[in-house]
Image (cartoon, rainbow, N blue to C red; front, side, top):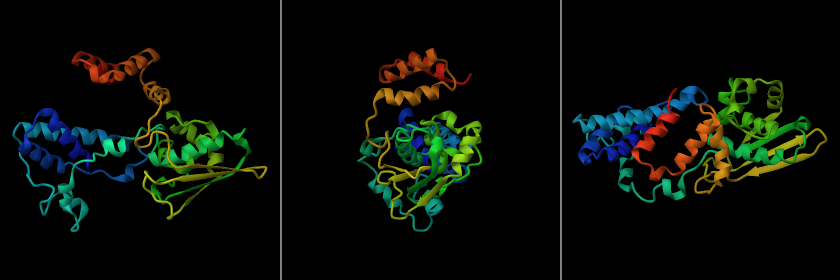
Amino acid sequence: MVGPLGAAVAAAHLLGLDVTQMRHALGLAASRCGSVLANAGTMTKSTHCGLAGSLGLDAALLAKRGFTANLNVIEDPRGYAKAFFGPNAEPTLLERFGPPWRLVEPGYAVKMFPSQFGTHFVITAALEARRRIPDPAAIEAIEIRGPVMSYVDRPQPDTGLAGKFSFQYTASCALLDGAVRIDSFSDQRRFAPDMVAMLAKVRVKQLPEIGAAFETMHVEVDVTLKDGTVVKARCNRPAGAWGEVIAPETHLVKVRDCLARGLDGAAAERVIATVDRFEALESGAVRDLIALVGPR
């Protein structure tokens, strides 16, 4: 809903648009906004951000060439604010737009696991518990307590990909495998016998008293073993959360897992070395990088 607008503004800066041209770009982009959360957990979800970037760039390019739109598209009685937020929309919020910028304060987040960010709390707690469980076969039951987030309460995800949005599934991956990687979300892993059995042992409690904001929420995991032992773990803030520094080698574990989907080891290391000095790259090196990671 906001991606095309943000992309239009970013592209407008890169293209050197003046104020009026940028307003036209926003007018164009406002007519290209929208996606549906029903696609969370499908391949379509991953296209949302790419499509938003494409539409925003297209709007800015058109505005640069003289294409016009409503200059007051946000606050117009039939504009963006009313369309998406109804009669109580407050376009005056734009008057307070400015520092502190969220990118700086509290800073950006790095997703250390390839799944919805709320599940990172569950994964972190489950991995902590896993270190104190010598054999996953000894697990009798799992209870997860967290905030009210209906879209991540998926006891039986239809596919491995849908498991990215499941507290139950991501906890099971962490407890069974001691790691959560891209291959954790394949259909093969989702329907493996040990995973099917583990999912049947998981119960999720969503508690209103736990706030659902990522910056303040927490998740607790209790793992009951067959001998009656209860292993408890809690995550208040997963690695990679806003403003938190991550050791480069820790981050590169996920980076290499991602790059391995399409590159051999040598090419992946070239990408890592090039991106590490991205700010100093000349245009030719940027073209080489795009060619290296582009479609084959």
